[in-house]
Image (cartoon, rainbow, N blue to C red):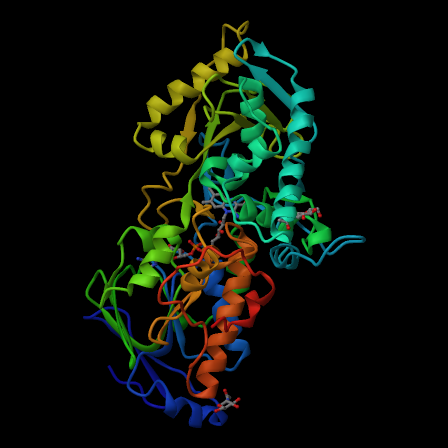
Length: 522
Ligand SMILES: Cc1cc2nc3c(=O)[nH]c(=O)nc-3n(C[C@H](O)[C@H](O)[C@H](O)COP(=O)(O)OP(=O)(O)OC[C@H]3O[C@@H](n4cnc5c(N)ncnc54)[C@H](O)[C@@H]3O)c2cc1C
Ligand SMILES: *[C@@H]1O[C@H](CO)[C@@H](O)[C@H](O)[C@H]1NC(C)=O
Ligand SMILES: *[C@@H]1O[C@H](CO)[C@@H](O)[C@H](O)[C@H]1NC(C)=O
């Protein structure tokens, strides 16, 4: 495929060639001749989620416009995934993916403003303040119950866990699991009530258990987003109820893209790379050539060989990819003929089995969609993977069982008229919901996750963020950083000593957050 200096020839499939004229500013001729002559683009941005779009925006700001976003889905946004849900005539747009701006910031006495919040406000996305820590209904296996004393205690204990993690960092002690951390501060949940509130303060955020999570990284994850004293935004959260979908903020932000800069419905199958450049092959056989590929696929996609590499990725990269964890967070929406449940936004249900449908959120609430008859339950981690193997009807039966337990005196609870949940773990475009940092993931692993391969393969995405892994704003910051660093390389004529890797990870030294942004760690 050929592209001249004044014409970009874009081939979207092997048999249909689409030619688009794009006149490039004369000032850019010198740079252009250095790079994309004879190729489809200078940069192929693989994946059109928050990270990919913000990387594209950043490249554009740096004067680089000959990139192309390759996205498998039929729209941009990635894990911002809105769906119309419910019976005809009673439908609402619900978010099966991300729903909150977590840590708003920017206000009086708060930290910096969360860039996701900036975009949400810029595009007038409708949100509601959502508090996790007040106005919560409680249930156990006998029905309505009040264990707010235990709830308050565990909310406090979670803070203590993050403070004790800080003391460990101070003393240069090694990381352990958050479960070890809880043990060391004498928090040892045994009863259904204790397990449910611990789940609520921990798993419900990280989508994995304290056993599966790093004590230090989970504490940092909390602090850098919510704790103003640690440089976080603020403890506040906003829930999107926008009927255009939460995705609106990023799709609007992506409107600067020209049609030839985006290729939707394009599933990447193979990425071939060398020191000279990259060739990306789509499942339909189309081949695209570029100088660089910026890979923004989720950690789960990288872990599960949905995309193959030629040659295979080096061992140090594979080890980093396999060493970080992918959690799963599943919201199961049900619509009933009418609301029969609690009047609060949130309910906690304490079961004998930890993680069995512990959190319920009512959307039939004055703050959200009154009269909608919609409620949803959340499960995470192993329980999510478990229910993905069940049919919708089987999951519905389990949820109804729990509702009957919560309301033992209610004999006339109707069946839901609609049920919806997304199987994130089995979705080949995600393979889970968002990343989580395990205790066995070291600083060098993290560097290797972000490191370039042969200076040609670049990596971004939520999982590359040391401070904000898991979050939308993590994807935003990583997209911006990758865009900036890549632009520097392109404009400077090469990329030596940028995002270098460690050939072997040998030393479990404590994290070094301070030189995180330095880019050179060797
Ligand atoms: C259920 C759920 C709830 C969440 N809740 C919140 C929340 O409330 N607040 C918050 O801050 N964060 C939340 N998150 C996390 C947040 O959604 C992510 O951190 C963020 O969207 C990740 O953006 P990204 O650009 O890194 O990755 P992605 O959005 O995954 O972008 C990668 C893109 O690559 C595409 N792709 C994958 N494979 C291929 C292929 N082979 N070929 C071509 N394209 C491909 C995908 O379709 C996707 O569009 C939630 C996530 C989930 C799943
Ligand atoms: C988290 O924040 C608390 C409160 O500001 C602080 O005491 C603690 O050291 C921080 N933890 C880490 C791991 O930085
Ligand atoms: C072209 O490259 C040079 C460095 O080689 C850089 O300073 C300049 O900003 C680039 N111009 C554009 C328009 O990107």
